[in-house]
Image (cartoon, rainbow, N blue to C red):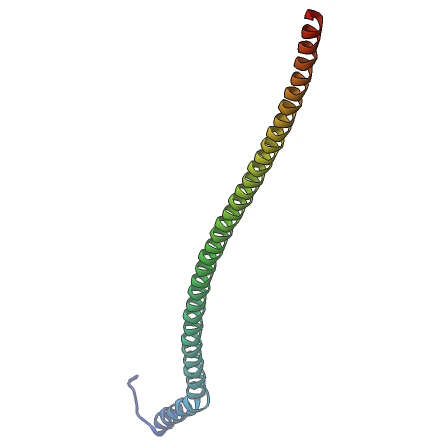
Length: 144
């Protein structure tokens, strides 16, 4: 008994049917599946690029916002410093005016005191003269 491989028409038909089956499986399942996977991969790549673009744009906006905040902080500090200077100048002006007014009031009070002192001196001198005349008259009147 010889167990050799004998080529007959069934083997060729089976091989041909297997090739047709592979062609149909490739046509029906593999190509559409590959196309869907390629489309999905392309969409993922597109979405990744878009996400990167949005991330960069968000980073740009974040940097811009930080810059604006820094500028606003500098402006606020400038405004506060200017307000402090103005308040200090106003306070100094008010103090200076108050000191001038106080000095003026002191001068007026001194002047009034001086005038009252002069009046008092004049009154005393007048009374001294009257007393001196009275004393002189008494002294002269007693001597005579």
